[in-house]
Amino acid sequence: MILSTLCYLIENDSYLMLHRVKKQVDVNSGKWIGVGGKFKPGESPEECVAREVYEETGFTLEKYSLRGIITFSSEGWEDEIIFLYTSDDFSGTLRECDEGELKWVPIADVPALNLWDGDRIFLKLLEEDRGFFSLKLSYKGDELVDQRLVCY
Image (cartoon, rainbow, N blue to C red; front, side, top):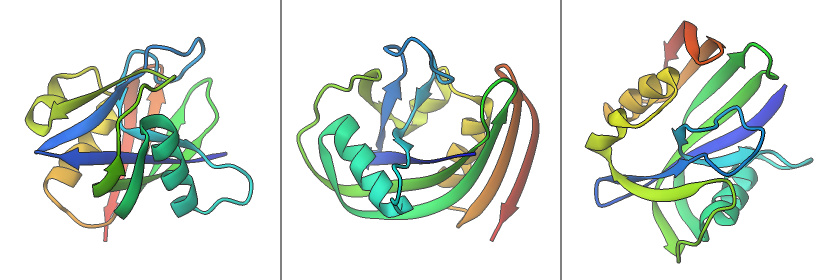
């Protein structure tokens, strides 16, 4: 099982979105997602999200919130537990990302992007400020075949 983080940076009612178009083999190829990535050995979720955000964007997180945990399962890929964060308090200068194109997208326009169907579920939960949640998403290819949500 893979452990990873995912963070949505917020500024001026926009999310910093990553269009995954640069890697050869990528479960997220062509999709728009937040920034983040896999844990390194010995890292906590907080260390991982801070490192990944900095590596992918050049931003240093000043404050951030753990919003939920996502279990991602897709045929042909290793299962993944994702710690989902948001932050509207960061510093630094945006830089180019080697995994895709970074773009500030108004939150209202995000649903029109090429997203995983499951991302639409948790992005709506974030928008509604529903509190902490656990969401299990099961896919066959790009098709969401099962979802299970627990809100706390």
